[in-house]
Amino acid sequence: MIRNIMIRKIRKYCSQVAVMLLSGTSVTLAYAQPYPSKPLHLIVPYAAGGGADIVARTLAQKLSESMGQQVVVDNRAGAAGNIGAALGAKAAPDGYTLLLITNTHATNASLYTKVGYDLAKDFAPITLMSETPLILAVHPSLPARSVKELVAVAKSRPGQLHYSTGGNGSSAHTAAQLFVSMAGIDLVHVPYKGNVEQTTALMSGYVQLTFSTMSGLLPQVKAGRLRALAMTAAKRAPAAPDIPTIAESGYPGYEVINWTGVVVPTGTSKDIIAKLHTEFLKALGAPDVKNRYAGQGVEPVSSTPEEFAAFIRAELVRWGRVTKQSGARLD
Image (cartoon, rainbow, N blue to C red):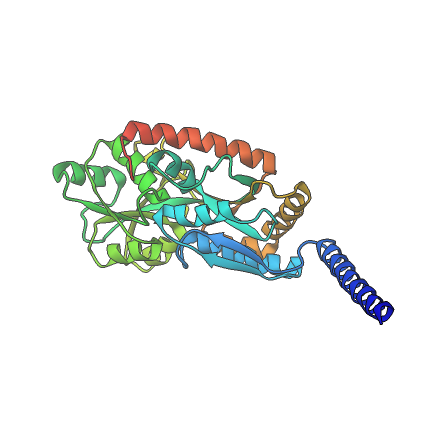
């Protein structure tokens, strides 16, 4: 009797050990699966339909094809990109959560008291993805057909002209701050939740001017609903060669480029970073991606992770200096 009980206990114990060993084997095999073995999530910290969203969705489709796993765009708008960036910083460093960042995040570091992340420390850069200038556009009812005329109107009506942006700390807000400072004029800022809302406000006449992306404004300019006065880049854009730059309109040295890049949480393995870098460069070089971007006034660019890290540090210094000079601060 006792012997039979002991045999049954030994058999039960052996079965449990076997299950544990098998479970351990399955876990080991799961970790040995090639990357990626499940869908990836690309956090876009802005509303759908804006310039950054277009850049992300175009690439996500191409990456899904080449990587064999779906790349899901996850829009997490709010606080000028801070909400989505904070989520990205807290994600597991396993290569399955990526974050799109822009020049706005470099500005936020000095503009906001708390952003919820450290752009230079909490992320491992992959590559720059795109560059595009902003357009300074006005409502057709405003008697200004050039930057010079706009400044004249603004000086004759201090504090009476309103401009829209995609939110406090957005690239449009930064571009406007720099312009106001260099032109010595007084404009009233009206922040909205995204590019679509800020453009709608201008077309409706709620504001008199705006700084926004080419993808958001060019169709309305070509349709005659808005009037483009200038580009924020140092050189004219191939997609709109007839629109002069602010620099050549009397303000040399003015330049604001809306850039996007992709990062992952710090701690992500070098092998995964290398894999993602290769895949992003492949997608950025695809002819159909280039054509889609060209139609939106977007120029695809790329960099090594090390180059992008140095670029981010330089942008933090640059926009920190501009923010300090303007005296702007947000809580």
